[in-house]
Length: 355
Ligand SMILES: [Zn+2]
Image (cartoon, rainbow, N blue to C red; front, side, top):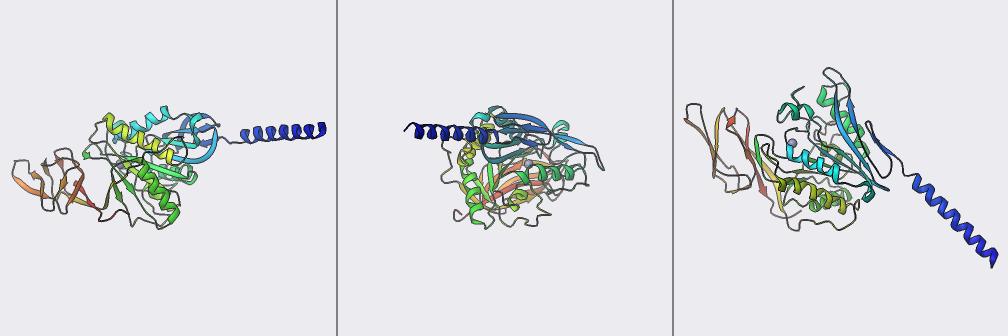
């Protein structure tokens, strides 16, 4: 009896030691110069070295949960004047508590610092390239390509799931929406669909026919998707304005998605019957001029409806812009300036069936 008790006690002690050892073995996680031990939040930089143009530093935050689990990347500010998405990630840096998280969260609030500081929309003013078109990047390219290369290696290759945050740029009046890009791989598509529904934005674009060549994936989310990682894109905010409601959509959507991924406790709040869009049609300006919109972001338009007019600098009408299809105005040019080829509006066409 006593011997049996002693054996049980010894077994229990060994079990405890093993448990403590396993706990201690949850590893640190490093991205760039940020290294977080389990239960810690660390701040650092992705150091983009100088090349054909200047070096840059991209801020990165690693939040390492006390419990081991998946790695989720939250990336914003490829377009540095899509402010709402950047502010949302700043809020999450503060709100996410490593003691509550299972797994690891990598946050990049602002990829395109030069765009943010100089207030230049759409591109990195250092090389005039969009920072969401040159993935997977090049070690010997221009600054945008070198940054994209580092993000692919340090973040995409090491995460399990990725969310890329965007919004209306300085000249875009945008209503919130998300992108879901099915791949034909059942498990991956099921998870990415669960993510986009959990995020909760009520309009979702089904983005098919994306580049599958791993050496030319172009977009950040597609770089992760093509590497087998469920990923989504979310957009909110417009025209330089940061509204609390738009920030809340992105913050709450992220927390709900983390619940769906079992990285936070509690139940996600998925959108039940979103508007699925299966096509996005651009309306382009065929010349320079002054833009006068007639409809607002989010309006449902009928094919042929006049959505605005363009005049020359003498006030003479040069274009009546009409909706080429029926659908929802996802965004419309927010400022009077137009040059030839500029995007006047994007119209999302409602899908006949939910996917
Ligand atoms: Zn963007």
